[in-house]
Amino acid sequence: MIEVKNIYFKYAKEFVQKNTSFSVSKGEKIALFGVNGSGKTSLLKLLDGLIFPQKGEILFEGQKLTKQSLKDKDFRKEFRTSVGLLFQNPDIMLFNPSVYEELSFGLKQLQHRNLDEKINYWAEKLNLSGLLDKSPVKLSGGEKQRIALASILILEPKLLLLDEPFSSLDPRATGWLIDFLNSLDSTLIMALHNMELAREIAERVIVLSENHEIIYDGDINDFANNKEELVKAGLWHRHSGKEPHFHNF
Ligand SMILES: Nc1ncnc2c1ncn2[C@@H]1O[C@H](COP(=O)(O)OP(=O)(O)OP(=O)(O)O)[C@@H](O)[C@H]1O
Ligand SMILES: [Mg+2]
Image (cartoon, rainbow, N blue to C red; front, side, top):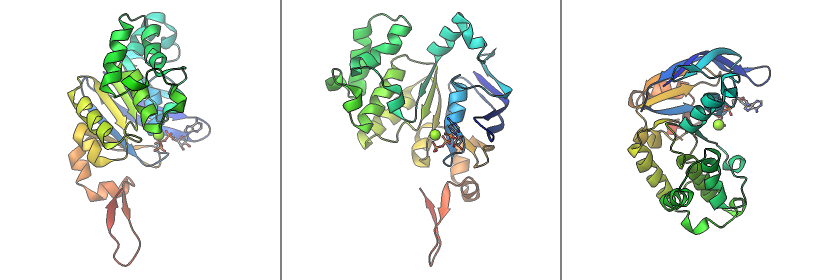
C-alpha cells in the first residue's frame, strides 16, 4: 500500500528523517515509537502528503506522492478519500462553529450523501450525540480528541494515520478505541508512547531514534521484551538512586 524509499526531510537545517525506508501492506497495524522530537509527527505528515521529502520518494498504491502529483484532481481526490490523519493537537483540526458542522465538513468536501445518518452514527459511537450543537472550542481536551477522531473516521479511510490518539482519552474512550481499531479492516499507523496499549492493537512496531533514524522495524512483542532495545530507543528509563531500576513510562 505504501512504500517509503530512502527519504530525507528537514524543516530547517537539520534532517528530521534520515534515509527512512519501509513498506506497509494493506491491513497492517503498525505502532510508531520514538522519544519526543524523534520525528513521528513529521513522518505521519509526510505519509499524509502535507509535507514532502527533499530526497527519496513515497509511493501510495504505486503512485508517487509529491506536491505535483497531488495537483492532479483525480489523484488528489482518491488520495484524500483514502487517507486520514488525526493530528496530535486536535485544536489545529477543529475550526467549525459546531460539532455537527465539524463532522459534516469532510463529507461535504467529498460530496457525500446521507450526512445526517452518518453523523448521528459516528456521534453515537464516539459518545458525542449530546454535543452536536456545541462549539468545539468550548469543549474539554478529551471531547475535542473524540470529535477530531470522529471527523476522520466518518470518512472511512483505507489508511488511518493517528498521532497519539489516546493522549487525552479517559479509560472508557480508550477501551472503545482499542476495540474499534482492532475491528477495523483499514491499514493503521499510529504514533504513541504506551507500549501496553500499542501491543493491544499493533503487531509491528517502527521505532525512531533521537537522531531521526529507524532503529527497529519488526515484531512488537519481540521489541517490547527486549530490554536492551527499549533502553537504546529511550523508552525505558534507568532511575538514579540506591537501587537503579528500569521503569517503563
Ligand atoms: N514546523 C516545524 N518547523 C521546524 N522544526 C520542526 C517543526 N515541526 C517539528 N520540528 C522539529 O522536527 C523534529 C521532529 O519533530 P516531530 O514533531 O516530528 O517529533 P515527534 O516524534 O512527533 O515528537 P513528540 O513525541 O514530542 O510528538 C523536532 O526536532 C522538532 O523540533
Ligand atoms: Mg509528535
